Length: 155
Image (tube, rainbow, N blue to C red):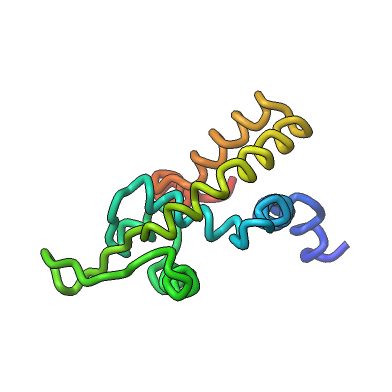
Protein backbone atom coordinates (compact mmCIF):
# COMPACT_ATOMS: atom_id res chain seq x y z
CA UNK A 1 0.00 0.00 0.00
CA UNK A 2 1.43 3.39 -0.97
CA UNK A 3 1.68 6.35 1.38
CA UNK A 4 -1.09 8.07 -0.60
CA UNK A 5 -3.48 5.13 -0.15
CA UNK A 6 -2.79 4.99 3.60
CA UNK A 7 -3.29 8.75 3.97
CA UNK A 8 -6.74 8.78 2.40
CA UNK A 9 -8.06 5.30 3.16
CA UNK A 10 -11.43 6.65 4.29
CA UNK A 11 -9.82 8.48 7.20
CA UNK A 12 -9.31 11.91 5.62
CA UNK A 13 -11.30 14.42 7.65
CA UNK A 14 -11.28 16.96 4.84
CA UNK A 15 -12.64 14.51 2.26
CA UNK A 16 -15.30 13.18 4.61
CA UNK A 17 -16.49 16.70 5.51
CA UNK A 18 -16.54 17.85 1.88
CA UNK A 19 -18.49 14.78 0.74
CA UNK A 20 -21.03 15.21 3.54
CA UNK A 21 -21.32 18.94 2.85
CA UNK A 22 -21.94 18.32 -0.84
CA UNK A 23 -24.62 15.73 -0.05
CA UNK A 24 -26.43 17.97 2.45
CA UNK A 25 -26.18 20.89 -0.01
CA UNK A 26 -27.78 18.74 -2.69
CA UNK A 27 -30.62 17.74 -0.36
CA UNK A 28 -31.31 21.29 0.83
CA UNK A 29 -30.96 22.71 -2.70
CA UNK A 30 -33.58 20.24 -3.91
CA UNK A 31 -35.89 21.22 -1.04
CA UNK A 32 -35.42 24.94 -1.78
CA UNK A 33 -35.67 24.56 -5.58
CA UNK A 34 -39.27 25.86 -5.80
CA UNK A 35 -38.06 29.20 -4.37
CA UNK A 36 -35.30 29.66 -6.93
CA UNK A 37 -32.68 30.01 -4.16
CA UNK A 38 -29.82 27.67 -3.45
CA UNK A 39 -29.03 26.71 0.14
CA UNK A 40 -25.81 28.77 0.06
CA UNK A 41 -27.74 31.84 -1.06
CA UNK A 42 -30.33 31.38 1.68
CA UNK A 43 -27.55 31.06 4.25
CA UNK A 44 -26.13 34.40 3.13
CA UNK A 45 -29.55 36.06 3.35
CA UNK A 46 -30.12 34.61 6.85
CA UNK A 47 -26.76 35.91 8.08
CA UNK A 48 -27.49 39.38 6.68
CA UNK A 49 -30.94 39.36 8.30
CA UNK A 50 -29.48 38.39 11.67
CA UNK A 51 -26.64 40.92 11.50
CA UNK A 52 -28.77 43.83 10.27
CA UNK A 53 -26.46 45.71 7.94
CA UNK A 54 -23.03 44.11 8.28
CA UNK A 55 -19.90 45.27 6.53
CA UNK A 56 -18.47 42.95 3.91
CA UNK A 57 -15.72 42.01 6.39
CA UNK A 58 -18.19 41.22 9.16
CA UNK A 59 -20.38 39.14 6.86
CA UNK A 60 -17.36 37.27 5.47
CA UNK A 61 -16.26 36.44 9.03
CA UNK A 62 -19.76 35.24 9.98
CA UNK A 63 -19.85 32.96 6.93
CA UNK A 64 -16.21 31.85 7.29
CA UNK A 65 -15.50 33.06 3.75
CA UNK A 66 -12.81 35.26 2.37
CA UNK A 67 -14.01 38.62 1.09
CA UNK A 68 -13.45 37.82 -2.59
CA UNK A 69 -15.55 34.64 -2.31
CA UNK A 70 -18.26 36.62 -0.52
CA UNK A 71 -18.24 39.30 -3.24
CA UNK A 72 -18.58 36.56 -5.87
CA UNK A 73 -21.53 35.00 -4.01
CA UNK A 74 -23.25 38.34 -3.47
CA UNK A 75 -23.25 39.30 -7.17
CA UNK A 76 -26.28 37.21 -8.20
CA UNK A 77 -28.18 38.21 -5.06
CA UNK A 78 -27.48 41.86 -5.79
CA UNK A 79 -28.34 41.42 -9.49
CA UNK A 80 -31.68 39.85 -8.52
CA UNK A 81 -32.46 42.72 -6.14
CA UNK A 82 -32.31 40.62 -2.97
CA UNK A 83 -29.41 42.51 -1.38
CA UNK A 84 -27.97 45.99 -1.66
CA UNK A 85 -24.27 46.70 -1.26
CA UNK A 86 -23.55 50.34 -0.42
CA UNK A 87 -20.64 52.48 0.72
CA UNK A 88 -20.41 52.77 4.52
CA UNK A 89 -20.93 56.48 5.27
CA UNK A 90 -18.82 56.08 8.41
CA UNK A 91 -15.87 54.54 6.54
CA UNK A 92 -15.93 55.05 2.79
CA UNK A 93 -13.44 52.18 2.34
CA UNK A 94 -16.04 49.71 3.65
CA UNK A 95 -19.17 48.34 2.03
CA UNK A 96 -22.39 47.58 3.86
CA UNK A 97 -24.67 44.71 2.90
CA UNK A 98 -28.41 44.86 3.52
CA UNK A 99 -31.45 42.85 2.58
CA UNK A 100 -33.86 44.63 0.29
CA UNK A 101 -37.60 44.29 0.76
CA UNK A 102 -37.51 41.72 -2.06
CA UNK A 103 -34.74 39.85 -0.22
CA UNK A 104 -36.76 39.82 3.00
CA UNK A 105 -39.80 38.53 1.10
CA UNK A 106 -37.70 35.82 -0.61
CA UNK A 107 -36.25 34.76 2.74
CA UNK A 108 -39.74 34.58 4.25
CA UNK A 109 -40.95 32.56 1.24
CA UNK A 110 -38.21 29.96 1.80
CA UNK A 111 -38.85 29.42 5.51
CA UNK A 112 -41.39 26.61 5.13
CA UNK A 113 -39.19 24.85 2.55
CA UNK A 114 -36.17 25.13 4.84
CA UNK A 115 -38.14 23.84 7.85
CA UNK A 116 -39.26 20.85 5.77
CA UNK A 117 -35.64 20.07 4.86
CA UNK A 118 -34.59 20.42 8.52
CA UNK A 119 -37.36 18.08 9.68
CA UNK A 120 -36.52 15.48 7.03
CA UNK A 121 -32.82 15.66 7.89
CA UNK A 122 -33.54 15.17 11.58
CA UNK A 123 -36.06 12.38 10.88
CA UNK A 124 -33.34 10.43 9.09
CA UNK A 125 -30.29 11.46 11.12
CA UNK A 126 -31.94 11.86 14.53
CA UNK A 127 -32.74 15.07 16.41
CA UNK A 128 -30.13 14.55 19.15
CA UNK A 129 -27.47 13.51 16.63
CA UNK A 130 -28.27 16.62 14.55
CA UNK A 131 -27.87 18.85 17.62
CA UNK A 132 -24.54 17.18 18.41
CA UNK A 133 -23.44 17.52 14.78
CA UNK A 134 -24.24 21.26 14.76
CA UNK A 135 -22.30 21.73 18.01
CA UNK A 136 -19.30 19.86 16.60
CA UNK A 137 -19.37 21.81 13.35
CA UNK A 138 -19.69 25.13 15.23
CA UNK A 139 -16.62 24.14 17.25
CA UNK A 140 -14.67 23.44 14.06
CA UNK A 141 -15.86 26.67 12.38
CA UNK A 142 -14.76 28.76 15.36
CA UNK A 143 -11.63 30.93 15.09
CA UNK A 144 -10.25 29.21 18.19
CA UNK A 145 -10.14 25.89 16.33
CA UNK A 146 -8.19 27.52 13.51
CA UNK A 147 -5.64 28.91 15.99
CA UNK A 148 -5.35 25.55 17.79
CA UNK A 149 -4.93 23.75 14.45
CA UNK A 150 -2.13 26.12 13.45
CA UNK A 151 -0.35 25.54 16.77
CA UNK A 152 -0.89 21.76 16.94
CA UNK A 153 1.82 19.30 16.07
CA UNK A 154 1.19 15.71 14.97
CA UNK A 155 1.58 12.95 17.52
